[in-house]
Each structure stands twice: as C-alpha cells, then as structure tokens.
Length: 571
DNA sequence: GCCGTTTTCGGCCCGACTGTTTTCAGTCG
Image 1 (cartoon, rainbow, N blue to C red):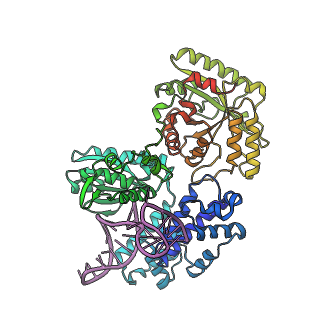
Image 2 (cartoon, rainbow, N blue to C red):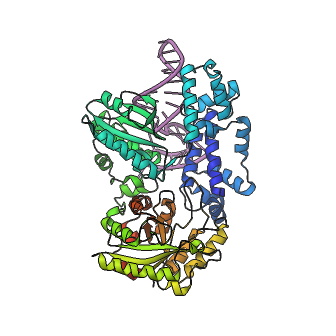
C-alpha cells in the first residue's frame, strides 16, 4: 500500500468509528475526504511536499482538521485521533460492516453487551443463540446475521465491471420478456461503468408491481431473497446483490437520475435545485408540491439549466459545473473506434490465428488492427523469434490481400527489461509496423526505479505505445508506482502513446490516470489485448474507462483513420 | 469536520423495508 492508500483507509476507519460512537456529521466529512483523495491522480506525499498543509486543504472536503491528520501521518506514521478511537472501540468494524443488516448501532450494542469484536465472535454468539437476548434482536435477526456472515465471507470484494455488467444485462433481458413489465433500466455504479461494482440496481415500470416482484424474486439464479416489498426487492443473484425497484412512469427519469448517482453528483445537483427554488428527489423535481419534471432525466437537467451528463461523468469531478456552462465534452463512443492495436495469436500465447483475429476485427466494423505477439524472455517458448517474425509477416501480407477494406498491421508487444531496454534488437524492431512495450516482471521496484525504467524505454526510437502502464490487476495487485508527470512529459517528447487496456481486470490506465494523461495532451490507445476472438468485444470496457476520463474522439489514438494513425506513429 | 450565489453559523437527503415494536429504530441505498 502506498501512503495515500494507507491514509485513505485510516480516514474511512475513523469515519466508521465516529459513526459507531453516535457522533453526527463528522463521519460524513471523513468519508467524503477519503473518497475525494481516492480520486486524485497525484499522491498525498507529493502534494504535501509541494505545498504543505495549504496544498492539502485545496483538496475538496479537506479542511484544517483532516489536513492536520494527514500531515501527522506523513511526518510520524501515526494519527493520534485514530489511535485513541481504536483504543476506545477495539472492534474490527471493517469486517463487521460487511454483514448485511449490521450498522453502527448494532455493532456498538454487540460490543457493549457481548464483547463482540470480529466476525468469528459474532458467528459464535449467533450460533449459541446469545444475540436474541439483546434488545431489538430476536430469532429472525439472529438467523439473518448468520446468513449474512456466510455471504459476506464469500463476497467481501466488489466485483469487476466485466462480471457485473453482463449479469445486469442478463437480468434486464429476463425482466424485459415479461409483457407486464414495460421499462427496465440498469442504474447505480454499473450504469456509471465504475471499474468495480458493489451491487446491481435495476429500475422498472410495470402494470403489475406484485407480479413483477414475484417474478424478480424467483429468477432461477437467485440464491437468497433479502427483502421483498411492494415496490422494492433485494436478492442475491449468483454472487451479487441485486436491487429491483418499481416506479411510476412520471417519476422514472428522476428515479433513474437518483439511482444512477453518484451520491456526490446527486448532492451537487440537488444543491443547484435548491438554489433555483426547487426540490429534487427520486420522485421528481418539485416547485412547492407541484412536480415540474420527472419523466426523463433530460427534462430534469434541462429545468436546472444543465446539459445532460453521461452517467460515466457523474462523480462530481467537474461535470456539474461543466453541465451548467453547457461545456461538457462529447465523449468518445465505441463506434468511433477504427481499430484495435493490441492482440495476440497462436504465434505467442493466444488461441486464434492471424486470419481469425483479423476477420473478427473486420466483422466488428474496424478498418484496421495490429497483431502484437509477445517478444519476451519467456518468448523462447511463446514469443516471436526472428524466424517466426518473418513467417508471421508473410502470413499477414496474405491476410491483407484476402481482406478488402481492412489492414492488418504487423506489431509486437515487447517486454521492457529491468534496465529499461526493450527485449528486442533494433534489427527486429525496425521490421514491425508498430511497436508496443510493457513491463511484465520486476514489478516490485520503487517508484523512482520504475519511472527511470519507463523513461529509458520511451527513449527507444521504435517504440509507439506503452501497454497497461501501471501493471495493476484490480482486486489482485495495486500495480507499481510511477511519477506520472515525468512519464507524461517523456511520452509527449518521444511521441509515445499510452494504452488503456480493456481487459476488465486491468483497465490500465485507469479512469483517473487516463484523465491526467489526456489533460497532459497525450493520446490514449484503447486496446483489448485479446488472446482469443471472443475477447475482442471487451473494447467496451476500455471505452467506458476513457469516457470516465472525459476523453473525446480526438483524445483516442485508434479513433484515427488508418492513414492518420500511420502519420502519427513514428517509424 | 467541512463548507459558503442564505458565508463564520448552521446545515450536511430521506424514503422503503425489516423486524421489532404497539408507533418505531435501525439499516440501506
């Protein structure tokens, strides 16, 4: 964990502990501060080094108090307030909080009465029937807690977008098939295409709410029904919690707006509503008691004098102000993509042939693709040797002759060695139409070492694109740190492009980093890194990521037509 | 604890659902 991540985690812990103590508002301030720090592209240590406590206080949601906490942590590795809170409530709140139905009040009650400190204590007490003796808890709650412990053990992690989105679409399709269900929309963080999803929100309109709730709560993949009401039900579907809400058509737009979120976006929008003398809720935009908008999101934003912001932008990272000024960017779309510049074939570690990959790309509507097999130390077995390279070139030439209105570029994904050199001699590099490079080992180096390594790699005159620049794998490893300012400067100087890798476990550059890259004037290449034909459609996830990074068509390398692309890349 | 186009005090979302009650507290989103 980086210092920034450590501080974010502590701020969340402080927020939780304050809440358990029954303190009002302060917990909200702490969690808000933590959230805002998470979405920064610069790390806290650097910000502090640059401008001390004053610079910290420029971060939204951070004032004197929290800036002081951060300074204390950077200087001493400790925060006194945090240590004191921990001492007064020695409870593993983080894990207890993952249990559905357990909130601050019950956690405090459990600790005070039964000295319950963690999941194991809780499970034991519940199994012994001790919980039901507490005020406000009887058998049913005890049962639910036991079930929830099981679920929380299995699904402590947020799920990848690449898992949640298809699941949400599957449920959406099932609901849409029912004649009495009219509209079905996916809301929540899935609609905003966040890289990880906690639970899925589905909104419907129906002529028969009862039937709709019955149908939803009895879908075949459902493992458990957590709640079932007249207008709202919650279930566990496969490994995810799914909420379904029934709405009136007149309030569908306001409900969609409300449930797409994010929370921070909604707070900002509601504030604008209030300033204009309105009140905005999930039931509509009201002037007094009169609903003046609610059917569509568009009419709500319009009445507020705002442009409709695409869900991917709704994080309160400047989109509210831009929407008021009618200066939102026209975000890049999947259909703008002209080609995919990163994919593998049977020449290295993938399933399909050059022709199969190229034909599939053409079928997706692209006008070009680049075949980029590995050139790596492991490549003695899998990668391209000089001999294989010549063979592959011939094969690509043949495919190019065969496919009309489509161009296959001969590329490679070359490993970056520990010293920053590329794992291929000039003799080989100059044979390719396009050269990608990436770090596949030696991830444990320091920020300084990795930055130096990256800069050295970008010095290579044949290099065009750095793939998955931080090497992170979501929920698996954080990726190495880089001095992005230096990396971006070097990229610009050397005419190197950075990738947003579309594999849903990577999404690297991330939304935050891609936005910083874009702001530095660097074009981003959104690629699938497909190792089989059926992975080529993961382009959608990369596009979502760069849309979250405010990218327009102009910011994306592979939205360029082939002739312009070839002009832009150095050869 | 943070914030300010009601600015140095007084807001900071609130309604649905559950399980416990006997009119409501706690949790969730």
